[in-house]
Length: 294
Image 1: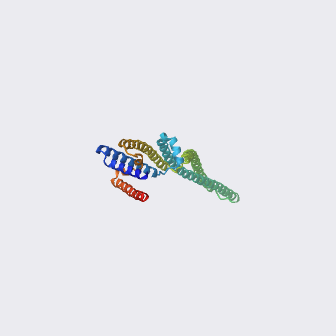
Image 2 (image 1 turned 180 degrees about the horizontal axis):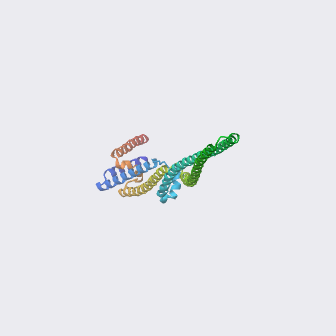
Image 3 (image 1 turned 120 degrees about the horizontal axis):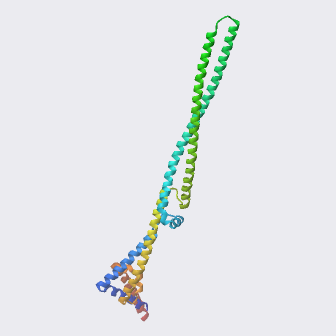
């Protein structure tokens, strides 16, 4: 039985090698296409994309909105950087006006002390002049007018400077309050945009919009890989059916076996090797048969 099976295989090889040109060409073309598709499927399975299952699942749920999501994420990062610079500037302005107001308040205190010191000094001097006037016959009216004049001028100068310091201190306070108000608004904006960014990071398992863009590209590549894989599988099934019909139309003793030896239908060397193995196998069987008969 085994000898007859081997002989049928050899007859099938002979039939395949002696096919009409058109049939042989169609058979080789179909077999070549099957080999190509099988290779494509193997290569598709070997491809790995830098995207986790969690990322793939999340992105697939929002596939249509991903370009807009990425753009919004990138815009939030740009806005966050802008707010960060604005906060840094406003913090500087706040510190500046705080320092300036403290300096103005310190100067105001100094001038108030100076005013008190001048008032005490001139009061003391007037008392001394009055005592001199009472104890002597010296005419001190000129001195008194001089002291009063100097006292008036000094007081006027101190008053003007004190008034200027008060105005400047109020202006510094107004600017300080404006800086604090703007700082609070910018901080609120910064917190909101930062929360939005952190939400996107946690949701898509990324660290930046650039990484999300990369993951989105990896997702698209993986989707295309899956589509090609499914298409190759469908094509492979089609060509396997076609090959089976072609082999069945030739009238081989066993056409199913060639579905697993497609390379032999394309490569003459593979077919030759197959025939050689069968010939060697049949010779061994012939030898065994002669031994049994003897």
